[in-house]
Length: 274
Image 1 (cartoon, rainbow, N blue to C red):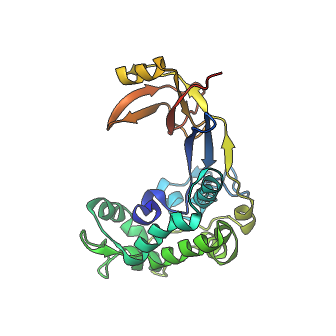
Image 2: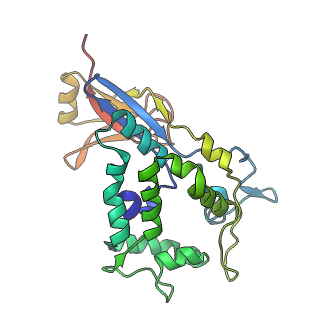
């Protein structure tokens, strides 16, 4: 659903990771579905004339697109740990993408931050902007029928429908030939992703990193430790320097990762008993 209602942070063109506790096996595992760089990316891909590209020049380009992991993660998670099918899981999102949802202030503000670049791309402008070039107004209904069609294709045929076939071809074409207007006011650099990159994408399941709540421990978190619970997070993912355990709307514990890198997803699970 978030791919429909929060596309600026949760779209199917991205990735993610999660920590999962399997109570039936008393086991914590992590699933790494983050994006990966296309094979042709190099240390100089974001440099021109010996200097780094300005951030927005690199961001709004085909170069910044990683090989997406979200759809593969959905499929892996539901196939191995789920209680419903991918088709069932996507049905509500498909319905909302077709029928629409009401634009709130956050969605408006996020669109506004990207407005100047959306205006360069006719398809993006048609979706996110009104005819006068401003974001869709708060309180109006936002529909994304193309996304609904893509999700429906994935629901029918599985993740393969995203990483191969027409959807994959359209993704690669957009990355390598950004569909900008002749009147675009920014330079959109082409990316290097290929169909082989998409076909090679693999979700990785990893053992978690166990952490100690070192610098902040509330009574609630201390009580969990006394009852034999352990704190676990994703290993070596992201650049987080610390993690937080949330409960009841507030921080219960915060921890420094045991190894550099750490992660930004965390669970509390009972320690396995002999």
